[in-house]
Image 1 (cartoon, rainbow, N blue to C red):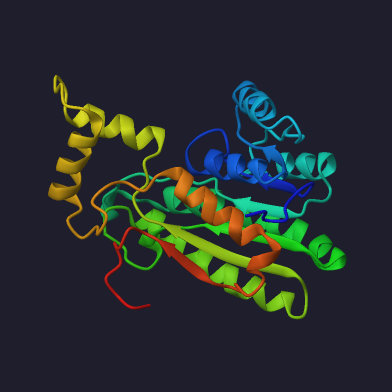
Image 2 (image 1 turned 45 degrees about the vertical axis):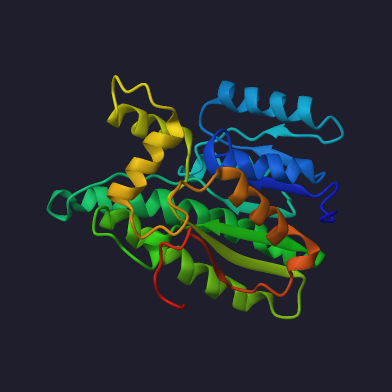
Length: 264
């Protein structure tokens, strides 16, 4: 299915690995010109070259920037003043006990997971409205609506993204501009795969067998009993960015493998 994204310009934050990279690849596959973002310029450049090699009809570019910094964001805006698609994927997470989270940590998570994404949306949304096309996606988590208690500082920020998405969506009435949130469940990023491997040292079993044991023991509520593949989230994001998804407005879209037990 042609998603109608040829020659659209898409900025995907945190797109050198994991979910962000999967989204960038799926958008490039649909003909979009992706702006690859990360803090490491060389790592970003390697991803740009990889995408250019695989999708030579597109024009990926290096958008390396520490977007948590206001100054770095402003430099990014000067380099790329208009885009058609913004995917706010970059974020941080860590298992932490509530009593160990001080105000500095709370503020760090808020600046990184919320204010950075909001700063990009605030800058790019007006031009999207002016040109009557735009897509903004926030990558949240099932933890936004079902906090596990293992990382409250992370859950707080992901819940905020749901509220922000809904508020911004109210500004798009009558326009071909949408703002939505994707809530992935446990996803098999490079970091997660390494964590699972480290949990089973000196174990000769193939990864899928270790994965199955981990899911059965630690995440029995998952209905798929495996980690979600980044490509699955990437394909969903590509559809939400397409002209065919204009009816999705301020929607929190769950792709959680059945982790959340409620109807809504």
